[in-house]
Length: 213
Length: 87
Image (cartoon, rainbow over all chains, first blue to last red; front, top):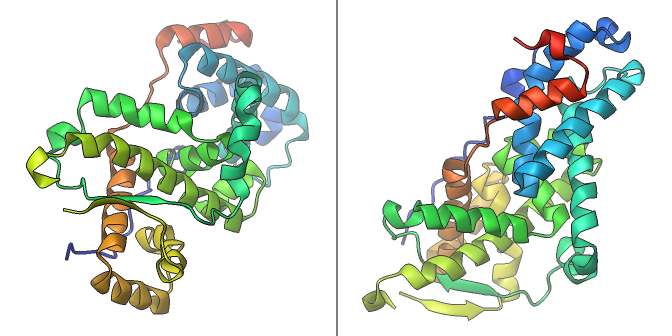
């Protein structure tokens, strides 16, 4: 039997590390210097999120710009109950989802059942590809396939997976960013991971030694 | 090595739903014991656990972290009328 450890997977990187102190009063009053400081502190985080959600540099740049334009306009009404990073993540995620919806409108109805329906009768491919060497698991081609697999996820699963597993937000923060319950975050995250596992299985099984099949 | 597609029976499906909590270390001790008992008898579920864990690890370890390109930062500050704060 392969050992199954209880060690939690590390999800420590993310916005929590870079939370900085800003003068909310100055930001609300439209202080340009303070806003520039905010932009410099969080533009990298927002660009990374948008790149991962959209897989396209031009789209990521559009989302980055729109996020800070909307943030500047909304700052006078920002009540400070959320962290600034969570609030910015929310604006950026909404912008990215809007762009995705514009681009994928014809396929939304096809993907929708995957997002919330209970996957009764779902199938799992049982192939153990964990034994593949790192050179195969982490090759340039494999990395591209990993990116393409994220792109293939339905948008509601993609946003949860990117925020929770790639950006390292907690379940609570992810729920706050997306405006859904923590239970919904957990359910969608699990479905996203299972869907990605299926896609990776389809890819890596072709790279197993023939003698092992 | 097994290579097949299965539609998980109800006994497996119930536990498969708990796998993400298990891998995140958030599963209750009782369900953890139940899952590990099941895994000691069910090779298919063991493969799912191992490959699911590997999937998450690969994403966390290998997916690129896009960095903000200097020209994108420049255009952002320009769009926001913040050029004077560019260093």
